[in-house]
Length: 293
Image 1 (cartoon, helix red, strand yellow):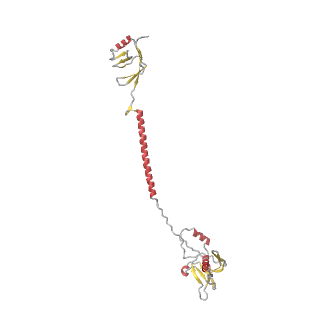
Image 2: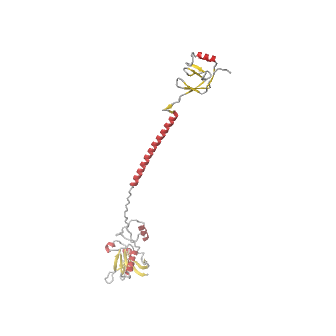
């Protein structure tokens, strides 16, 4: 084996005059004394001023004590890393992105919160100040106007009355319905509780006084022949005797102001008579009590 020095220092890292670091790898140098002297002479230096191989330390130094390249030596430069504000470039970029995300979230949350508060305030105001709706009901006047010969049937008049929710103003003029002369020879029947009153009906009939005495018991405002017969039946029921023996109904409402009613209860039938003109026959009818059961 050769006795010449051999330098093997893998991974050696030294500083250069520029402040950079170089790393030696795979350093393998075998030099005989003659080669060492020849190499030093080629450098025109002695000792370690410019470069010399230090056999005791296994190092070779040159150029003022800094590492010098030798044959068979590989040099890998270690470049200095770039930094921003003392942080690596990647770390700084991630930090900036995180700050932007936090700012965006804060701004969005603030805007959303403000809108929610405003909506809540508007809802509270609408609850505190509800809209006021005024409903005004106007009474409906339902006059009864029908000719003596034509007009609505009692059933249709009743249906119209029940379909109206407003108050009915009772008419004082016009003509109510009376089915004369078709009522001639028919019975008018009134039932009060369990008592039935039967009346014979004659169109155009009325009753005069006997011996100068008026046959009228009282005047009643009625709007149908049946109501007039019911008034006579109620009078007898309340008095406990058959005092009302007949009644006369007139469909012309003008009698309310002239004769104080449209139905006259009679206490006698002795002077009954029937009108001969068509207008009176159509607008007037008399009932005579036949039986009570």
